[in-house]
Amino acid sequence: MLDPDTLARRIQESLANPSPDFWKATIDEAAEELRAAQDANENSAADRFWFLHKVASIRHRYIQCIEEIKAAKYYEAWCDLERVEIELSWLRKNPFYDPKDFDVIALEEQVSNWQSLFPYTIFFSPAFLEKRKECGICRAVVDPWTDCGHEIGKVYGGRECVHMVTKAEPLEISIVLDPVQKYSVAHSVLDKDGNSVDHHDYSPVKFVADRLHSPFDGFRIHKTKAWHPHSRYPETPPENPCPCESGRRYADCCQTKPGVLRPHFQVMFEKPPPSNMPAIVFSEAREG
Image 1 (tube, rainbow, N blue to C red):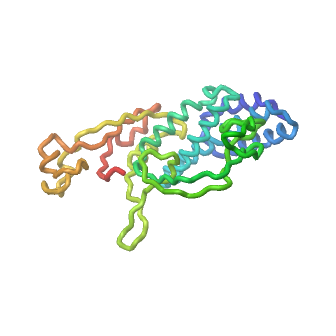
Image 2: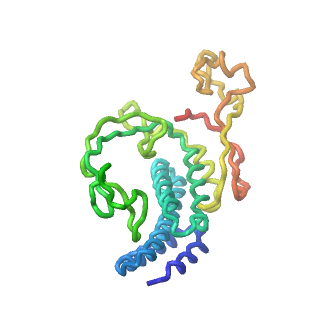
């Protein structure tokens, strides 16, 4: 069995590696070592191999997120970003190595930055009555009167403790703005033929992705509002809704002002973007 610290050093030296093949091979190696440690009842080694396997899995999935964004598979990327967010939280809860040594904190910030660029604002949230839950480690029933000694979200001998709901009753589905499960996006409208159409504006997401040299390049976001020139709205009559989306008439809102006040993203890149990329891009699609 390999010494976990040997694999840890190799991963630390390769954190900026943008190759999905490298991370897939590292995932496979860590999984093999994890199984060997578990078979030998080496719980400490198993925990550390679990941590390293999770690090490799996260970085592989994060690269996949960027590839999906560049391929305009935005909803798929959104779901994978949520998966990365959840898996990063497991590393924070189970620091068998120092998370900072594996860019866990930095990657959490990048995931949050990406999520802030997406236009999703309305989500579905299902509610269930949980009638029976079991511990994912020992299968003991989870209730207020029973304590099996395993804590949800913790890792024991390389095994993750989750609670499995084995009996449940659906109660309701709510429409919410701040969901527990981010993948439940209410993101489609129907066209005249009844087909589902994604109506969202992803230009801020594309703007950032097009200017990254590597998937792990960092960036920061500052959200504000800026005046868009009136010349961009020549076909908006004064009596129509204002393009700023306030709900008021154009004539009573922004038409007499220096411009149309719209959301503005200021992006600070860790590495300067390619010189042939425009520094400013206007978008007029509605939010949400």
